[in-house]
Length: 606
Image 1 (cartoon, rainbow, N blue to C red):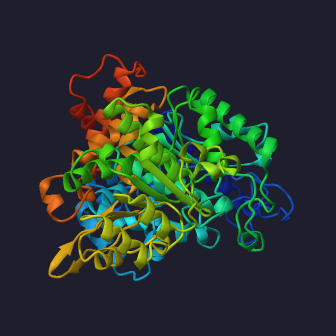
Image 2 (tube, rainbow, N blue to C red; image 1 turned 180 degrees about the vertical axis):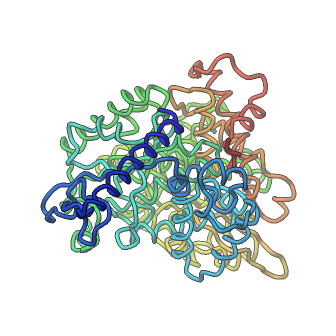
C-alpha cells in the first residue's frame, strides 16, 4: 500500500474515533477505555500492561511515514548530514537539531573524541558503538585513519575486548550457533537479514590470538576481521557475516563468570563436534551457494588442520591462521631478499613454534622454493627447521610427532633449546610463532647477529605482550643490523642516530585482498598458487624508500591500493587455473578490482 493511502486511512480512523469520543462526552459517558493503561491514554490492545511477567506478549511496532526508524538504521543513518531536502522527504523534521553537517566534519569530530580516550579498550567500544549507529561513518574513519585505528579494531586491542566481551556486550553482532541449534542450523542462517553473503568468518573461540580458549566471547575476532574485509579489501558490509560456533569452553574462569554469554559446559569434542561443523558447512552451501568464502579463524591446531583438509576440496574455504599468516610472512621474506641478497633457496629458516601458523608458513616457503627452482617440495623442506616445546624437530622424534609436524623431521642430533638450534642450524631467518612472549632472549638474538650480517628476526606472536621479542630488543642486541618485523605493531625506534620502522607482518595485508580477489572472480576453490600470487603482489609493493628505512612491508596507509593489486593477482590465478566463474575475464583486473570496492561516502536519498 502506498504511503499516501496509509496516511488517508489513519486520518479517517482518527476522525471517526474523535467523532465517537465527542459524542460520548456530550452524552456524559467516560471516554477512558477500561482496557487502557493505568493513567489513561492509549488502549492496551495487546494486554502488555495487564500481563504478568510470566505471560507472553507480542512485541508489535507500527511505523507510519516516520523518520525515527531511519535514524536508528546503521546502514542508512547519516546523523546531522541529512540535507534539508532529505529531512523534509523522510520525515526527519524535529528529530534532528537544525544544523546540517558534512561527513568530513563528522569524521573530524569523532576522531577528536576517540583520541581523548586513554584506554585502548574504550576506543574499541567507541568504534563499535559508531558501527552500530552509522555504518558508513565507521568505515570512513577506519579507511582514512587505518594506521591509527587498526590496532584498536583488530590486534592487539581486540584480544582484550574478547576477554571482556561478556562485560562490554551491548547488542549481538553476527550469528551465534551453539549445540542448542543442532539439527536446525539452516533455519538459523535464514534468520540473518541479509541474503547475498559473500564472506563468512567463523570461529569456535578455542584459540583466540595468543590468549587461549575464550569460548563464545571469541565473536570479537570475526567481527573485527570482517570490518577489515570491508575497510581494507572493499567487500560490502552487507555481504559479510560473522559467526561464532559455541560448543562450550574449557576456560573455567569463564564458566564461573556470571556475565559469560556462552554455553556453560565443557567443550564438545569428537563426533559431536564434527557433526555440528558438518551440518554448518552443508547449511552454508545450501543457503548461500558455492561461491561464498568461509574463513576459519582461531580454531585450535587439531581442528584447524582437520577442517581445512576436509573442506578445501568441496567448499571455498581459507584458514587465516595457517594460510593467511603464511602468505604475509612469505611476502616479507621475498621482499627481504633485496636486503639479504640471493633467493629463498639460498637461505635457511628456523621456526620457534610448530603449530598451525608455523607449519603453514613453512609449507608455503617450501612451495615457493619448489616453484622457483623446480625441485621437489620434499627437497625444499630441508631448508626449513622447526623447534617446538620439546626442542628441534628431528627424525628420531618422528613416531611421537603430530601428523602436521612429521614433514619437518629432518636428520640431526636432538637439541633441546632454541639457542642450541640457532648455533647448530645457523639460520638466515628466525621466525617466532610460539605464542610465548620474550622467548627470543638476548643470547638467541646475539647468536643470530654473530652468524649473519643482517639477521632477519620475525617475532610474529600476538598480541604485543606475546611477541617473542620487542623491536627495541632486536635492534639493540644486533647493534642496529636486524631486519625486524612482528605480528603486532611496535613504534619506530632510534638506534645510534638512525630511526628504524619495524615491519608488521599483519595478516590484514593479505586476507582482505585475497578474499576480494576470490569474490570478484567468482572463484569456487582456494588453491595454494593463489596464496603465492598474493604474497608476490604484496612484496612488489615495497619500494626502495621503504627498504632505506629497514621496512619489508609497505605502509598500511596504502592498503586499499595494495589490496586491489593482491585481488587482481589472485583473480588472475583463479582464471588461469579454471576456478573462476565470473566471465568474461575483465581486461584490466586491477582497475576492475578498484571499481568494485565498497566506498563509505554518504549516498543521497530521494
